[in-house]
Image: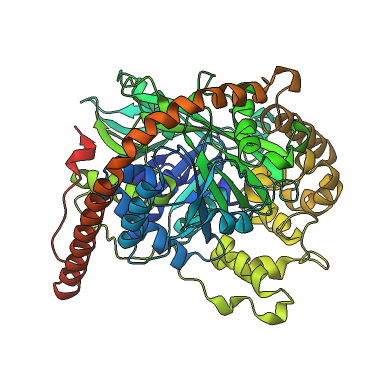
Amino acid sequence: MFSTHYRNESWSQLDQDWDVIIIGGGITGAGILREAARLGLRALLVEQADFAWGTSSRSSKLVHGGLRYLKEGKLRLTRASVRERQRLLAEGPGLIDPLGFLLTNYQGDNPGRWTFRAGLSVYDLMALQWSHRQYSPLELRLLAPHISEAGLEGGLQYGDAQTDDARLVLRVIQEAAAAGGVALNYVQATALLRDEAGQVVGVRLQRTDRAAREAHAADAAASPPAAPPIQEARARVVINATGAWADRLRGQLGQPARIRPLRGSHLIFPAWRLPVAQAVSFLHPVDRRPVFIFPWEGVTLVGTTDVDHGQPMEAEPAISPQEVAYLMAAADHQFPSLHLTLADVLSTFAGVRPVIGSGLDDPSKESRDHVVWEEEGLLTVTGGKLTTFRLIALAALRAARHRLPAMPEPRRDLPVLDVVDTGALAAASGLERAARRRLLGRYGADAAALVQAAQPGELEPIPGVQALWAELRWAARAEAVAHLDDLLLRRVRLGLLLPEGGRALLPRVRAICQPELGWDDATWQEEEAAYLALWQRHYSLPEPATVPNWHVLLNAARARRPIAQRLHRRKRVQAPVLLAALGLIALLAWLTRRAAAGRSTDAPQTARSQPDRANLTR
């Protein structure tokens, strides 16, 4: 919980010796702050915009092991991702929940169903489970009505998970703050501070929130005078966790750019217009990339693209007309009988992935692994995936141990999320079990206070979504909201889930939240106008006339399809060999994991591990 005076009090205390300063308030920075606070370090996190403003609120919302890593032969990475997924499912019900996937298979698909069956066998064994199964075309049509029947050979079902990515970031930050960490949004790191040897030893910070701007513009003779909007903070370790923006700070050290920003965009449809009970995964007819259509928060998401982001990084990303056509082609191809049009789209969103560039022509072939670099005292951690944020945080802290000799050894056996008392929200609250579970998952230890703060009628769901009116009040009161888009796009996701960003509900939102935020009428009107303009530019569709005709794309893809099918038939003989090889790998992976589990049970964990040199460049 962030109290009313939390921002000003924290700002006034920045002039102290910190152990760790983390720049970047996405899931990577939040995870590092959480683990640093757990270890008793004096840790500060600053974010130039809102928490989760960047990639971490614009992901595909999936917590998954990563079948693509298995395809690339990265067994260790896949195994680590699967294990983290299982931990998050166990520790964060209501925030991280299971999601079934239907993997459709059509005549001529490459890879085919035998390859996927082999891969899913390995995938399940890594999680010590056997959850996948095969379906006939008839069974698949019963599970996914309206699915395209032309050439359908059946499919596979397997299990992964999904989350509300922005709420995950908020919960991790709140638990870090409860453990002694300090987190400030709307504080920009404008410059790195260096000592006589040229090593980074701190940062120059500037507040960018409305209150700071207004205080700075006030009469300088006010008593007591307003705190200066610029401060310097020093630390033993400065960590650059700014993701796709990492090269900005590295550039201050004269380091060459290494990040290749890639944009991933999504369309959101009402669930009644594109009904799916679980995720449907298939190969895009145009380029054979895997795409997904899946349920989330009562709507249906279609994604994702993977293109170079050539726009200025200072601005919020937005879906392009070409990406709209690409995703509409995917939805139309998989569900042709629904006759979807642009008028059916509720909203859109686009995020920029931090991928390490290697010069490959195809963006989708770039590695998604995380890296840790130390350059002149600045520790940069970037890349990786949402699912493994805790492992990335631990890797970063291990890489910093030579600067923090008194730091205890980071432990991988501790819970990712704090244990929540499931009895904190009794049935007497009047909430149904599903609503209680949802609140406990998203708000953790703050869930009970949220319910207690609710006014009459505010424990009812907001029309059209699963969220409660009380969540708006709590976010405005206790979650460091500085702008209306913080509230409606990241705390309570009305901007994504409702038509026109929730415009029709803004009068009720104002009645609840304006007093909690302490805004006067002029401020609310300014914020509302800015939010609606932002939504129109970055979360709505581009001008329909600029969107290419996706039916032309589909027709061209269908014309190329017979050639691809003939080539694929020649390769089918390889499937049994591949199946046997992957089966052997699966058995070896399972035996290795079993042996490792036995060793960890029998032997005390006293050895200190060193930083992962494979991901550390000095």
